[in-house]
Length: 340
Image (tube, rainbow, N blue to C red; front, side):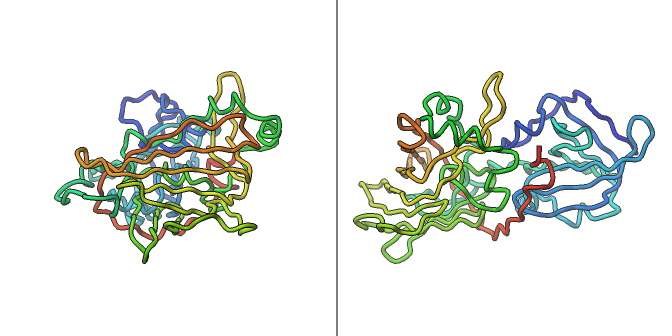
């Protein structure tokens, strides 16, 4: 078995990923055939190590990243399929930083089975045989077309001097808190692809349970204000109210953090979009009954780092039958493709 590097192969794109583009080149795909040496079955990313012979006849170890193990298992790819000694071929975009790394989006076995890391029809299965939703409560999954964070380059244009200095001193390839399994900003939690969230009641309050990073947010309904000198955290302190059928969530008491993991600007190095502890957010969450979509609008204001409010982002979610599973994030800041 051998490896073909740098091949421009036709194929489907991998599911969009909020940290994908700075690490992998979608226009350059690689096909690696060999024997599994090790499979690291983690969240938020999994890695398969493959021993293969390169185009010069030398035996090499290739390391290919993919979705987290929970998402892979939902789509039919289990750790037992990728155990040491298994012969296979993986295909996908090549790393921008290392010729012996890739993101695998398909796996082919010697018996001709070919499997996609995104499943055979992931978007379709979430709505099959589900009764119509009448409110925002239940399990939901981000629509495939909106697996993105968005808004970074424009926000970079109205930074305050303080915000600019903070961003200049920050290395997104080393410093991003998700590498330490910190969920970071609320809008990044909402933008996590391929993982469900559940909205439920907890007494008089509302509980938002996101599978990604095991985030649980208890929204204090009809609370008057945030606690003075209260504890600060990545997810802040949230209070909410119902405006008709729309849940309005106001969050403050943030610690400083990262709104967007990577921001690409032409002719400039990749940056992270940061926020200060002065950040406040407003989320408006409602059900579009006709289209059966959960619609979220989220706006951010941070007068310390930005000269004006950030653009409001809108995300949509489809009803899902998926159960929120334990995420059990594994820190990975100094391993894999996450180190520049």
